[in-house]
Image 1: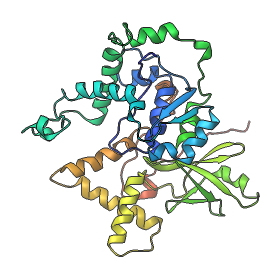
Image 2: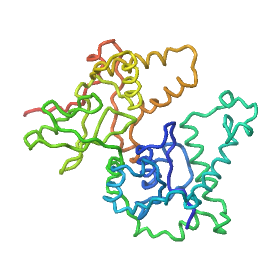
Image 3: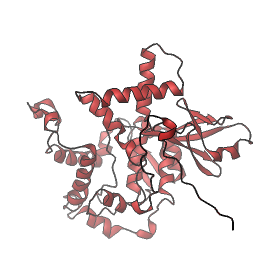
Image 4: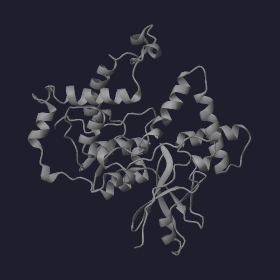
Length: 349
């Protein structure tokens, strides 16, 4: 009806439930703070929980976690009938419009080898993934939304503003909880020493209150981009658990799988947490110290570049973000290098 782009997610990874969660969260959230954080001065008023979502038959759209989350937020999930690509005409035309602009950028691979010719795309490329995200945002909000659409005889943003009923917009009470609900999940039994996921032992002091209850499985939500925390769903809300060993660095699920694969190839069938992390750190050192930055190595670095920033999607203004402790000096000792924790001082009169 409006031809507005509600949101997007850009990454190097193939389609997955995480990509769906991040894209849908971006579509639903108020994007004003997101735009400011990227230095973008255009408007992007599209937001709100949709009443219905049309999807194709990709595996990520048939995931149990996705169906349950849509049901919880009263989103009607409509799958495209198999073998009927015409049902996706609107989005396919939009993708064609966007890719037409992308192919004008230095380093574009184009759609096929004939269009590419003798162009050395890697040598011509000039943008980082973050810069491409900003460029795409500007192309959407500063060009596509404000350009007259031939099917509308006006601009998409004008149609959106004319038909917008702010009273009817449904916004999630907690944007962070909304994202967590759409993240991939696993079920685990709470053991005496905590929860075990991906060969990592997680713990939170809040889990003590669940110890006395009957043994049962809990739903664990995780962000594959950052395994330094998981989210435990309970009747009383979400408990955020961290690795019990606080010296463990933040890693991605992709790194975890690569380490498992390397260990299997080396003949190591039984693995534990210590072996997984030592292998990942060794692989990182190999990539970081390589004199020749190959395409594969650059992709390795890009996959974990976000770990130095806030790992979750930024749904709150920067002014409300928690203060971070200054980076400690690296002394080679994991315990001494840990930044420590904020402490409240109480005095008795």
